[in-house]
Image (cartoon, rainbow, N blue to C red):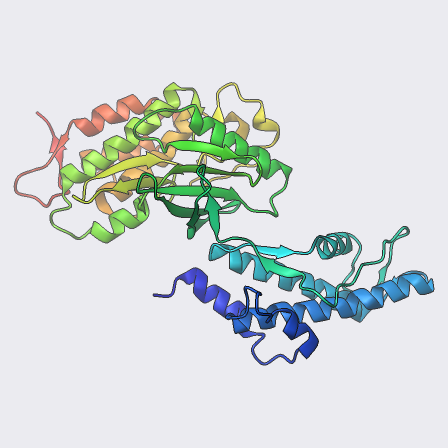
Length: 406
């Protein structure tokens, strides 16, 4: 079955199918020992981009050498900007399938440098001190890094893409030593220093937490800015959606999931940490063969410990659910996490994305979590836990029907 990532790559490569490419360039990517020999469309894309880059680099070198005010023509500037976008698009599409595009260091230097002075109109003045590009016509400049990672015992295992966020890709692999599926989260290469700092902080926060209902992380790789963690089969969104109309997926099962989520958040708050981005996609579940599941809080990229000095970076209000009562992101408090809890509980118990009305005991709990006035909300997660524990099913109603314990 073709995955969405594979379909995306196919669409990106489709534009090169009918493109004419110089045979000299095409042969660079079809040699006997070349890894692209069996990937006709991909080799065609590499050859096409390589050839067109060389044309622009040769022209650029000539302009700089001739001293014509170091002016790179308008059409050439637009062409090279388009090529830079092509490389980025192909790189992103490959990464989503678990493969990394590599580029010869000289070409990477030239493209990165050009982005700082190229203009889409009126031509681009070539900067003083411009270093001519060493054009490579006789060897490949594009390649693919290994689609696997090396384990501690030097064995290699294949990676499978399972998710992508704003700053990172998540892959999974099976460790043959333990027959255990593990997830690896890797920061995107185009991420800036702020993203890197946030990514490292996320790992450090999670590493310091050892609790059943919080995702466990294992090891950070400084070389590639990635870390390994326990693998979860589903997000809360996917898990509830698949089971929402099943009669056996009743109130008690939903309550167990809700309480596990609340226990995890309560532990987080007791450790002095606000999550700041609770959502149905950031709550994961480990699903076992007997269909039981364990909730795992994840994605701590926006999380903030009580005494953190990271507020200089996190100034803009962000997150999936934004508390309308929150004025400044750096003033985020546990009560602002609790506002999001109402949406999570509504989805767990009823499979709906909006807040349930306060027409029954469950609705009253949800409305109190997400009250517009923070002083009228539950002030701690422990209070919500107690309220949810005091709910039970009416025998003559649907599995989600509830009333208070007498």
